[in-house]
Length: 211
Image (cartoon, rainbow, N blue to C red; front, side, top):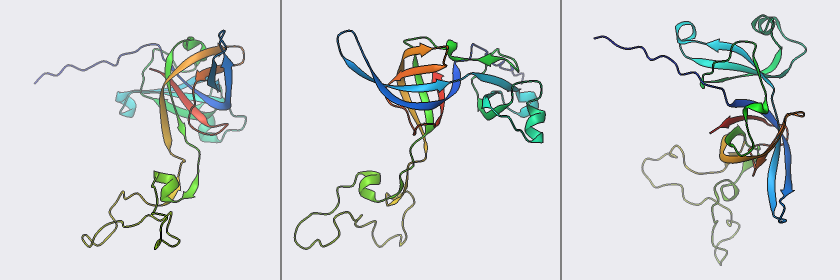
């Protein structure tokens, strides 16, 4: 049976890496307040083009940040281009070549993006804070059990079921926030202003992608 080979579709890449600076607010002409997040985004460098013939899949590897001291494997991989501190891959293919640089000029004011990053680590938390449990009744007969989990099952199958909501480590997981609108772009300082909040603390590495 003859099969047609699907060629990868290339287009202008709208994907960049950045770090969260913090939150602030801006005022409109009528005095309305809009909470925004400031992100230092880019510039990024295309460090490698992965192909299905050579690597088994199609992707674009990009580098962010400048690293002054590289080990030998990284120095060999990044020879002749800007030494990057952080490497990430995206399966969104592009017509860019190795060594090309991208900055926030790939976005425009009013664009809608999604932002991915690690959420804040909360440490070990109980079920009330971690999962929003109401806790036990604060009435007679409930002594020192107000924030307890309560029953977690019956006699069968005689072990704790996987995925049962209980106390444990909270936060520190990958979170994606969608539908964030770009309010302002400062190309000179590589600053993006997004409406609303994004995952993580100050300094968190973020992946920003146009929807």
